[in-house]
Image (cartoon, rainbow, N blue to C red; front, top):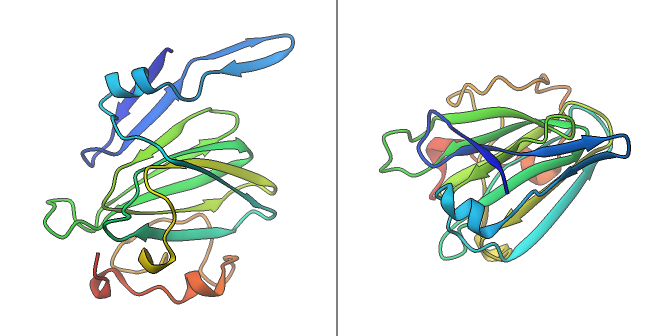
Length: 183
């Protein structure tokens, strides 16, 4: 597997672009290979695959995380449409606590975001009918399910939708501010 690895401003958060092979039939890409990811420094074992379909642009999902011992690393990609994808460092002892990485992931660009444990993750769809696929390193646990308010002013995330226009779940509207979480 040929994999382009882009390091970000926060250690451990990686933008990955698998090689894409295109011809008159369309496009083929190998999106995951344990040996190739291990060579890129990603040695976690993924245990679950998830997908979400957002019908309308401006849908925000997040910022989500799970507390230990069910903390999750995530590998996020888009099969249809596009998203503004965000990972926020919530590790209190980290020199980058409260900082974020934001990238565009789309079916067209084939990029993926690796989000290590200790980060809250969320995205905003930038196209209608966006299908997001992601692998996680720990199973879902309702008892460990947590979140950070996506529009927390202390984070300063430049979302592509205004707060009053965002399409959110009730749960995501009620997440606490970063200052109030217990990661």
